[in-house]
Image 1 (tube, rainbow, N blue to C red):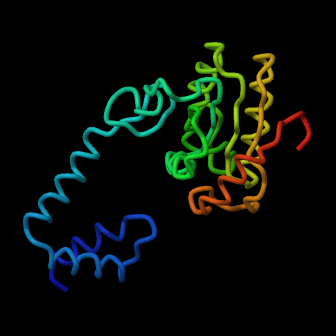
Image 2 (cartoon, rainbow, N blue to C red; image 1 turned 120 degrees about the horizontal axis):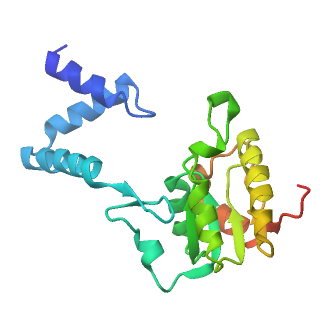
Length: 201
């Protein structure tokens, strides 16, 4: 194999879900593209990596300090939806059923993986709730052992703020399912049928 081809296949196969066979197909597709399109693609990737950042208020990806969702005055500031990753936020936004704000944790508590509460963006959640505008916190975390651990931790932490309604999305989403891969209809129903957390799940 050509050194150049081997290099690009090696780099592409570092992407999640991309094996060497898929990487080779992508490399051959890139080779068929116009040079200008390849330059544009490479420039977009470089610019994305260089300038993208996490919103200072919610942890969403943004090209400025505050993302579009947090700066939108039309959003419902009394409702805050907590998700694991930006991809989960995007999945919920696709449903067009939710008009509140978000907090992107950046993962879930996982002692086995060495992820502690301090490794997540729980401080952003608490800062937003401390402002006094939030009336309901929706915890939209994937149903897994780590997700349930995180759910209990957040529930106990948020209880310190008094009269805040804490809900979780309905479990129409199967245990172990990643929110990112759930269809829009199922997410919509899970949001509509969310339930309040009262201490026992």
